[in-house]
Amino acid sequence: MGKDAAARPLSRATPVRPPRRTAGWHAETVPKGSPPHRSLPSGADGARPHRRAATGQTLTPEDLARIDRLLAPTDRLLAHGYPGDDGTRQPVHTVYVPADRYTPALPREWGAAALEAVARQGGMETVVRELDVPEDLADDVAALVAAKLTSEPVEDLRLDLEDGYGDRGDETEDADVRRAAELLLDALADGEATPFFGVRIKGLERPTRGRGIRSLDLFLATLLDGGDLPGGLRLTLPKVTTVAQVEAMAALCDRLEEHLRLAAGRLRFELQVETPQIVLGADGTSPLARAIHGADGRVSALHYGTYDYSAALGIAPAYQALDHPAADHAKNVMQVAAAQTGVRLSDGSTNVLPVGDADAVRAAWRLSAGLTRRSLERGFSQGWDLHPAQLVPRFVANVRFYREGFAPAAARLRAYVGGTEGGAVLDEPATARALAAFLARGVACGAITEAELADAAGLDRAAVAALAHPTHAITEEHA
Image: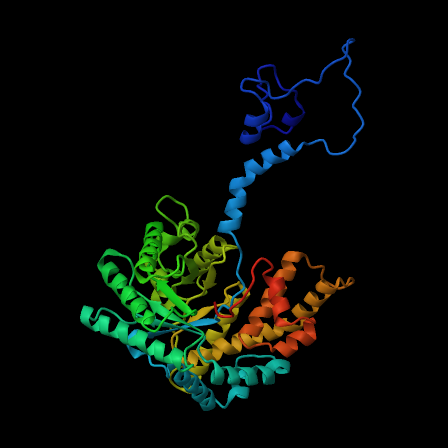
């Protein structure tokens, strides 16, 4: 179009189309075949009548009811498809171990092994400074991480029946599944179970489908021998490639609930995002959002699978990592698909283990701490750990992250709740909810004490949780 085109009048041949109308509204208010605009009535002399003075609302209740009917599908979608996070605790990590290696003592053993690794590197105070924790935070971070490794070294434990376990034949896997479930019942009875725990079955691809389903059935049935299913139970479905596999898993949960006499909707599952097909489908769209919304609320989390996804894209092994641009793309899609649905996000793992001489251990710790911090800054509050010594950078990075942000977040939330003006930041309700959620996560992982929270924010933990998730009532911390 030339630079003077906007100033030229339209020619007689140029069609002028009336503005579009919302289909539903137009269908209810304008008879078919009527012109899009009605003329105002004219007086006897052809002049338009004077506009009458406004006396208040002009729309009728029926007008408003029409709008409600037009938006009813949207209202249902937002209420059921985007309920927001429920405010229950999310672990900062998931520890993966082959199912046959599990014992109730494993969490304590991992914590002790992590502390031994720290001692070999000169102690916790030295380690946190090696990991670049600021001096004004170093002593607090060291004390809190040491306490964490002693009291709760593993937050979420996944018994692996997939890549970390392999194909050992039906008889062996049946026995290992039953044994692992029985040991979990022992741990629960003795107070040694981790807050969250569960099983990763084999995927629903044809070669592994039957075995994966059989193991899930045996695992749940064995747990039910001890009574009701425990609240911290997590189920993980790997190698998801299509929405149909997610729908099939949801249908399988329906049948298991029926056969095992569980309440409807009791079984939920995590999806591992580790194939290109679930990020970008054959039709050119991303199936992830459809997978979440097509599972009747059963999808609880999306976990990124670093190495399967990278390998499928043809990325050379030396460059397969959580911070590769391809990984960021997949996780960005995950984040948008899960936003406000209540589905949680977890980053994956690094396969660079802190083993070998002192220099190798410290290099692996610096790498892991940096990746953990990067994930936290990008909204991924959870990741995977594969080795006891990886707990050290995981917890150091988490405690540092929440303690660095604690004072400003608490001050801003206090000002928001108190209606104080004059601060450097003017927070809106959505930001206030994010501030409260940040503080709640910091308390849950042990980075902030409840006494510190009350003193700095002027609010107790329950009040902060209510601000973070005003539409949800939290009745069980580990639900």
